[in-house]
Length: 288
Ligand SMILES: [Zn+2]
Image (cartoon, rainbow, N blue to C red):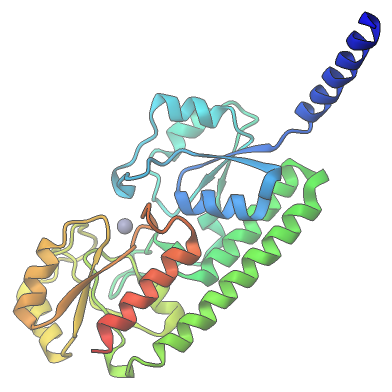
């Protein structure tokens, strides 16, 4: 009996070891939306380690020593690229050679900030860009774990179809907004990819925004522009203080609503939720 018991235990141990060697592919991510993308494409074949803190500020984030250690244990580290992670080179130097940093933004064409030659790094605000990035992610996952190719291909097809659905939904919702009202004024210049995808224009508010990029437009000129266009609503980042933007909105008789600009909002953890939140507020704000 003792032998049988040990034998059975031995079989179980072998089985568990085999499971261990086929365990999920470990993927670390520097942005919650990339974590979401990896989970949706990889399903239970990937273990996603989200390095970005829940209420973190995208433009101020730097990985801690613990984050670097967690990234070092992963096969892949997913990055937004386009300059969003100024620490990326240092991170690469601290990681073992087998850990590959995958710059998903490299799969997305540049879109420039209004009136400038500065590329807008906030590419996730366009579902078409997310679709491009999802193809690059699938290719990276396949390369790291070729045996799971079928799972990744299926996951990416589903993800892609979801991005198409979101695009169609948004285009339909935006038919409610008259052409002359399709202007987005945001607290920081983050919607160029979105505007490019959906036929909106953006008013540059550099200098009065929280991030100052490019030429500083004078406040007076911005105010005159907003009044001339009778812009009904201005938008502030959901994780920013609305104070500055609200002051401007009051001066031009507009209201102010939040948008998820940096892709970080714990109450809309998936891309679909985040994107629908933005579409709803844009329609609400610009159709009054
Ligand atoms: Zn931003």
